[in-house]
Image 1 (cartoon, helix red, strand yellow):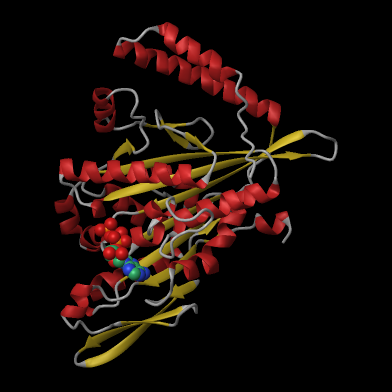
Image 2 (cartoon, rainbow, N blue to C red):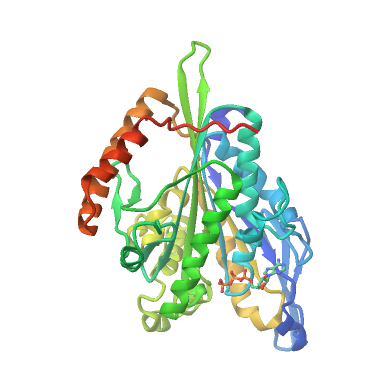
Length: 420
Ligand SMILES: Nc1ncnc2c1ncn2[C@@H]1O[C@H](COP(=O)(O)OP(=O)(O)OP(=O)(O)O)[C@@H](O)[C@H]1O
């Protein structure tokens, strides 16, 4: 496919995944109402209306039923997306669905165990994130070129952003202070947004990323216990940014950049409660403004309303480019097969089906000259240095200490080459 073809507008890709019955559902003998045509495009939901059974059929880009394995979903739908990231596109994968339908299972699965498996192997229930990480590093190593990989991991709860990778070495007190303090979202001056103070970790192999994921997820769980919040009410965003060096035939060094956003959204039952019935939305108040706004943004884009309310929530500000922008987007909608979840299942299917009509115009990121990028990075280091000095001052450390480490980092090459 030529570059021109790739830059045309494309619809958001929507996949449907129906999990197996849970133990509770099996114990209660719950009838099955969702029938999937595995790896095809159709899913049927059986409703009983006035004593008659009626099937409603929905069509998606691909449907994965209860027997579909993690590997099947990844191989059939996600590999091409990660390849595009490696070609220099920005891509986003969202998991959307009712609580307990498998969003975290699909996105993460057993990535915590992934790092302890034999070299080069993932556990069979590893989800999209560990598989994407492995695909990225395997490809980069095969290409035998210079590259760098950076990750960020944040949680969004009640319109507050928390850095799940905040460094632990500063001090326990400072960390707790920082974890409690929400990070501000700012315009980046280039039409996008940035989270001020969000930690960007440079990683050199899969196990480093898995450790970070484990560290971040543990913080998320701790926060849940302390604040008694439910996982289904918070969103997480794990981003991987890749820079790859290329040389032109004239010998000029260029840097190609691609970014993959992996989003585990809050349970969608919140949006049904509030989106479908306005009275209850007011009752829910600010509880999940981001999910509500996501729904409104989708409606505005699908119905071509003049105003798209991206600015009304942090989630839609962060992911603006993924909804009607230049990022390639895939939504994985998750449902339960049981009659007990019928109402939420229909709502998820309606919502996901509407999202299929959103059009994005994926564009390959402009390649930068290596010298320009290095200049930008030195600017960034200067800004970080100034910020660290302020921080160190607050903690009562000496400036001398920071200056020493600064000199040490200055001479370090920013690109990391991995040898097998
Ligand atoms: N496709 C699947 N195959 C096997 N087990 C699954 C599948 N999907 C989900 N499960 C299991 O169902 C349970 C709930 O899944 P999970 O925690 O991923 O749901 P969730 O949608 O992320 O929920 P929440 O919104 O509360 O975070 C877990 O025990 C998970 O292992």
